[in-house]
Image (cartoon, rainbow, N blue to C red; front, side, top):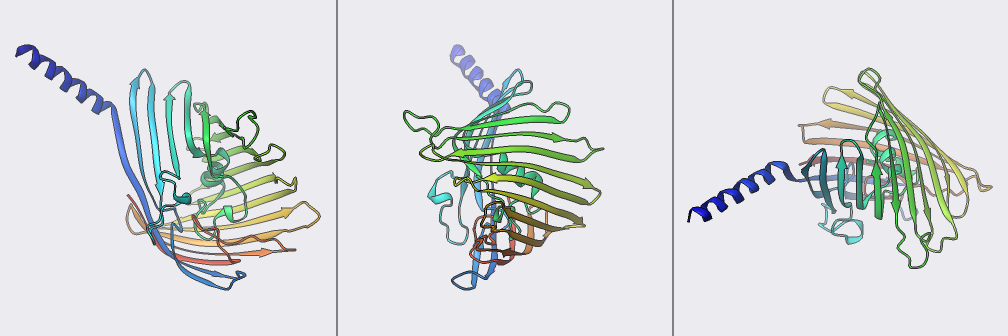
Length: 334
C-alpha cells in the first residue's frame, strides 16, 4: 500500500510539473460587416461580409518548455464565414495555419506545416497600414502567396535588431523537386524604442506545376513611428509566370487618436509590359476601440484601372468584384 501511495504521489508530482511547463490557448476572431461594392461587371453588390477587417477564425496554440532554452509549440487555426457558418479556405479544417515548431533561445526556431510566407508577413506587419484587411487591403494590388503547404521555415534569433528567415515549400512531385516548389526568404531589422523603425527585405518565388516557369517578387518594406503617427512604405518588383514584369509602390499612414485609429494608403501598380496595364488604389479607414477586445470599423477604397487592368477592391477574406468598396462592421477578438 505504501509503495502504491508513493507511486501515486510521484505521478501527481510529474503531472503537476508538466502542467506548469506547458500551456494550450484557445483564441479567435468574430468579424462581420456591411460590404458595398461599386463598378463590378455584373453590377453593384450589397452584402453582409464575414472577416472584413480580420478573417473570422478559431484557433488552438500551445507550447511546452523542454528545458535548456528549448521550446516545442504548435498552432492549428480554422477559418470560417461567420455569416453562413461555412468553413473557409476551401473547406480545410485548419486552412489558416497548421504547424509544429521547435525554438531555441540561441539557435532560432524551425517550423513545419502550412504556414505564412515571409513575403506575406512583411506586407501584413510592416508595409500595409490596413494590415491586409478592410477595403484598403494592400493585397488588392500587391500580389503575394499568403500560405505555403508542406513547408519548412527557419528563423534566426534577433541579434542587434537583425534577424532572418528562410522558407522552403516542397512541391512533392515524384521525380522532380522543382515542380510546384516555393522558396521565400527575408532579412529584417527592428530598432530600439529610441529608433522605432522596422525594415524588411523579402523575396518570394514559386515554380509552376511543370517547372517550366517561375513567378518572383522582391519587396523592401519600411515602417517608422513618430509619436502617434506611424508611416508605412514599400517598393516591390514582380515577374509573373508569363515573365511579365511590374512594380508596386505603397505609401501610407496610421494615426492614433484616443481610442480611435485613422488609416490611409495609396498604392501604384506599374505594368512594365507593352500592355501598360497600370492601376492606382486610394484608401481611407477608421477603427474605434469599444474595449480591449472589441472595435468598430469603416473604410473606403477606390481603384483606377488603365488599359484593361482588372484589379478589384476586396477585404480580408473577399477578393471583391468592383473598383469601389465601402465597409462598416464590428470585430471581436477572444
